[in-house]
Amino acid sequence: MSRRPENQKSLPAASLHIVLALLDGELHGYAVMQRVGELSEGAVKMGPGTLYGTLNRLVDDGLVVETTDRIERSESERRRYYELTANGRSVALVELARLRTLVDRVSRTLGGGAIA
Amino acid sequence: MSRRPENQKSLPAASLHIVLALLDGELHGYAVMQRVGELSEGAVKMGPGTLYGTLNRLVDDGLVVETTDRIERSESERRRYYELTANGRSVALVELARLRTLVDRVSRTLGGGAIA
DNA sequence: CTCTTGACTATCGGAAAGTGATATATCATA
DNA sequence: TATGATATATCACTTTCCGATAGTCAAGAG
Image (cartoon, rainbow over all chains, first blue to last red; front, side, top):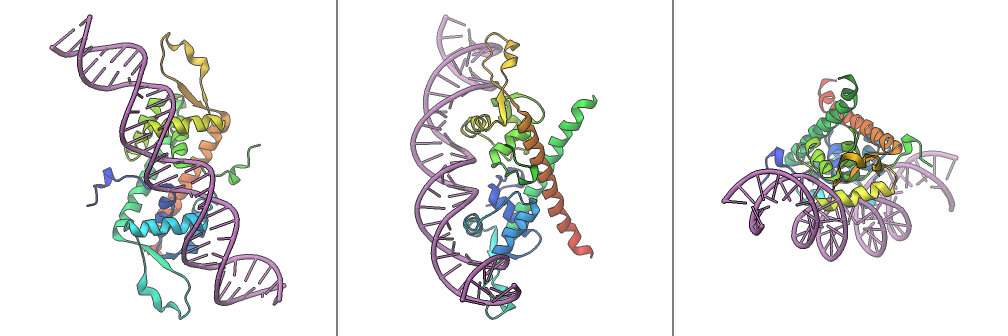
């Protein structure tokens, strides 16, 4: 089913931010919001509409699962935790690598032009 | 008019790719398409709909201008060249820096977690 | 010359994605 | 008890994205 990494289509912005935020480990929705904010230095302010809509899409697409195995946290736990699936993780890593490549390439054209 | 960099709202994906592509210098539309593809390792395949729509939006927003001063290229030049305005360039650089920060932070949580 | 192909710009309609407002509920703190 | 942060959820609206389509021009094939 899954294409080879090179062919993998890039994720929409909000999805990308979320899977990147989840690379560190499981988080609940609200924490994802905050973490996305931190990672982007406050530039990305994801509201609940974007968050839960995108999160559900990611679950539908099989990149994220709600962790049921963590119910034992507390009796009255309102939080819903999410983590990457194996596939989600690999997608996230591919995206991260691409981002790195992109930044490197663009940066190089900036400094490089003046020297030669 | 322009907000301080820290407050600058992040650009939508297509706009981001375009301004990053233009950081190297002016390009015509078709070349932007190709360059965006290259920079993203083929992951982003921007079609004409996205390209020209977004390009016009960027012009409206004052981040990009069509370079009129380059008409002398050839009599029958169909190409339309675009370049960043001063503001567009600064926006692009802020975005680039953010992207770098994002990649660094996410990368660090990956390798860093296991050590300590 | 004509036909095709690739470079190049352009627009349209619909689909996908993103967003703020709103709602609800719990908990801590003043 | 009122305020504000935590936390989840949905709705309606707008923005963004994208493929299909269309057209022009230049170069090369036949």
